[in-house]
Figure 1 (cartoon, rainbow, N blue to C red):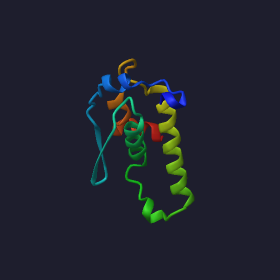
Figure 2: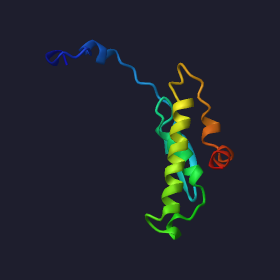
Figure 3: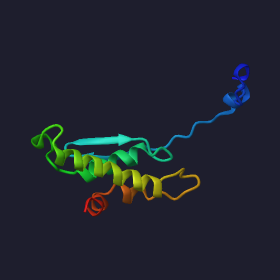
Figure 4: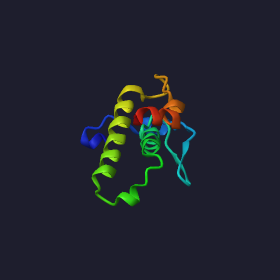
Length: 111
């Protein structure tokens, strides 16, 4: 790091203490999905997208069907908007995780 102008020192690395955060989990059809909680946005984001897609039979529509693609793109767009609005580091921001990954919220947002 120092050879290339980096700011992290050996002491920084020695004193680093990782924080264990409990994974967040949800269900998608027959699968249980567990992923990273905040401050990562990935888990909340993934579960929200899957909840918005819901029980829509994408397979029967076929790959690249406009209705399937539209649903997937809109689900992602909604989740990204919520990510921008609500997600952050739990040490500094109150993140409504339970709401964002709830089926009721996904139903509302899908409308």
